[in-house]
Image (tube, rainbow, N blue to C red):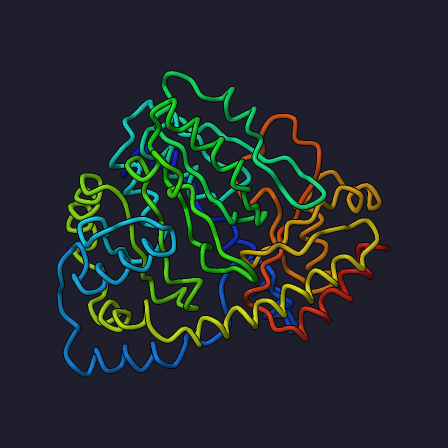
Length: 397
């Protein structure tokens, strides 16, 4: 029996293959230093666990509204609006089983086959996968490396917009490179979206992972709220990656489409998890604060370890839990041309596992440098330090 030809356009998240390779190497008796996945090995705050247990005991284990329970939708509307100086109501929020479903449902709601969608590359690989699977044309845009990190290539974005362009996907506090837009950069991007009448998916999965200061949202720029959907997730802020709870926040009309898709696809998001989060969203922040404190220590250890390696220089990002060092000089030193070969050799030589630029979208034209990505969310400080010592020895050999 033949499967649908459309499946040929469906990609995946290849970082999980890196995880599998690390697990296989570990099964042979090797201690793995896991920097490959953006999972979090920090416990979910106790008040959330207790609230979920109570919700189960109280019987919140059946179906609930496809849009999400009104109490949680209201809590998220108030929280998201207050932090972005915007006004949202229950009607602007659709609860989702995680942040990832927002991507595919957003495209289903606003993109027609043949429409062009601008998306960040390198970036989260599900953007590219869902655009092409649903019949859109994926138009990548990239970043320019600077002494401070990465900036959007705004000129390239401007040149890439054609009359067929329908959608812009934007991920401030970016995976994999931790890029954060300045207010000026964000306003220039917003100006392009408004000028060309683009729908915008603002992926704000890492909005709450900030080590100092307050985050910004492109949706707060005048003229953007009515054309933007925010991807919201509890995975990062609350260390709930496996709980699967998120939301789409946007204009009432498109949110109604999300709700209809919810009913068609999964009926609803787990009732007891929603109930557990109602009081947590705007309540006690000691749990999320402790998560940030731990991640900050891990970031500092990872940055110090990488900067101790000859040929690598990286700034400490103020958001996310990723580092994206340029390893072009390391590649030249080792006589390598394929960055995935560097990854594979590092695993068997040092037991350190990481992803590469190739796991975050297809390479685009004229890429000259090589990058690898370290996620420090799933590895303790002492193991970060030990892994970096081993990596230094291998990279400098």
